[in-house]
Length: 112
Length: 115
Image (tube, rainbow over all chains, first blue to last red; front, side, top):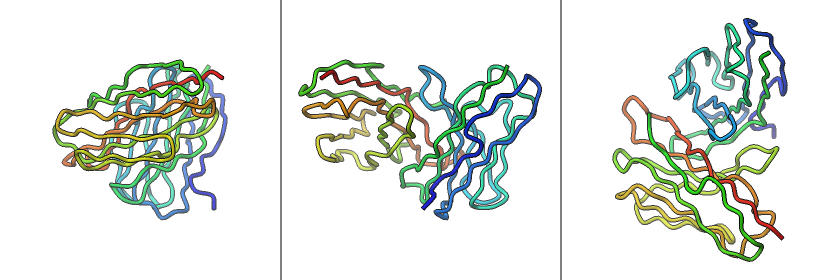
């Protein structure tokens, strides 16, 4: 039972490069989230989705785009990476609005 | 931006001590409050989902209470053990409108239990 899978696990980018982080869940969950974790800042919400085909902005959406074309996948894109986007990115999902989150294992991104 | 605050930021206790920490959140438009435990090099795992004012939840030596009218929740650990060392996060879910489905986390309380 895979749960929530994030790929890649690690990535190093140069400033200005682009990349896409993939989050896949096999639990048929409606809700999916992208958070970033920085020292002393807890988890900050980047974007989220309340169902296939929907997306919404979180607390820190600038510099990121997302898509949820299929229910099981939530993609996070960085069009032009900046050093400020160096962080650990966590994806999470849940099946109902009153359910807890299930987290992936994180993607460590370094932008030089 | 919602204000979800946790205190203290960090806590050091001795094995066997009991401890507690606080999550403060907006008292209006409340839907639910979650607690998560986050061990180093792992992903956060859910402890409790709390929805009703006066809720009390318990899992082993860990328990939580909820006061939605004044906007706070307490997490208690009885007889702390070194394996309880982790970051404890709370997350606020508001009642909907334009923020439907959104979870906002506090910055966490880092607990270290010394043998």
